[in-house]
Length: 557
Image 1 (cartoon, helix red, strand yellow):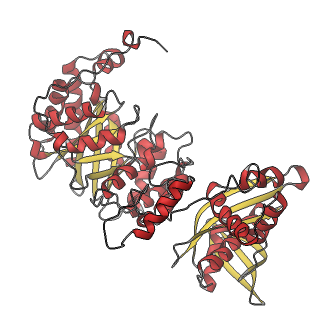
Image 2 (tube, rainbow, N blue to C red):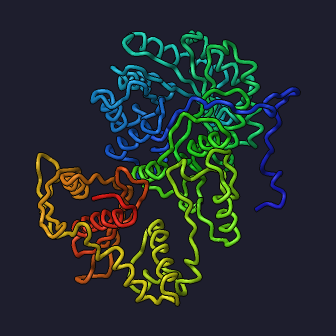
């Protein structure tokens, strides 16, 4: 690193606003939310989502409450084009949800984009071109007038093509790419030209998206840029100002919050901060920050664990254990003083009064979570802790949430019996807790079959001394087994699934971990299964989880 970085890097100049208003403003209502998980988020993945995962993500976003979802870049690939068509033609779009798609300001790509949206009830066409000096001079070799002309011509083409399809309610969104590095007077010129070309009115508003394509400065600078634009834009009553912060400086959430205080109406981002480079702004954190200030965000994260597990499945990305609100450890205290303070806070908390607990800015129950105090898992369970001993001695690599769950079982055992548990004792307790569970249901055998492109299963179980043969179909063996169990009135939901290989060669075994919950219960439990066959191990894990759930929550099976 340079000792004098100013010789290489230039500080972003301040925005001249002598009477800025945003520092004294507060956010009193939720913005318009737009999820770009399926576009900006998806294109940032090492392995983009397949059709199944994209559909699951789309439905998750709808369930959370997003009304505007950027689903694709349909002119960029046939895969994206086909996904948009599938959503429209197969009727997957709720009546109150609007699709958004992205297109560069280029005629053939715009035509392809409009083609992808034919037949939709309402659609947002999002076009962009780069406006900053580095892009104009280095990347494209364009003058300012050429940039303006490019944007205006693109808008006129969108207007022409969409007017040919009056059955759809069309909304235009325009982004001056790399807005934060664009001279404000030029950004204003481009945006005003685009607004005029579209013919924006209060009844037909245009969305002007002002992105931090790359974070250039501190969040207060971005707020100044937004307030300056808010003050100077023509036809302001016909414009929705949208924010699209990225997290290159680690301040995307702050930039979005200050941008809303500065006059913006809308925010684009991704669940848990996924996106290009360091990610888009984290919409979960933004929404729950509002919630902790007494503002309902119009997004429902009452079951944050389900949202998190769906996200991890769809993106194949782990959520950091310290991630705000949702990380596995954010409601866990290892410090004894913290544990004591939180315990006393819970004892003193009046359920009908304002929330006021030490170390907890939000009630975990509002998110469908619990306060998990992990006590002595490292100091009282052997040299390397419970997880280390099971991995080192028996090859069991537990998921993090299972580590927390099983440590509670270890704690209860040591409290009851006293003394120190050796590795063999911990293994015996793990086996009894997860692998040898036979009540209320014991696994006997299963047979798989194919039926009309679905996976079918005949599952034999024993319950109350009687043998039952259950049948079901699904997208895979686990899904089929879940449907088979529904025959006996058991409705299970699988929150997460992981598998590990134990041993090598002919002695290798599969170890499956299934996290389940059941309708009517707030409790989540793990089940574990081991077998030479991975499918058998998975089904054993499912039944293990069911038995654990019944034993720990009192839910009837």
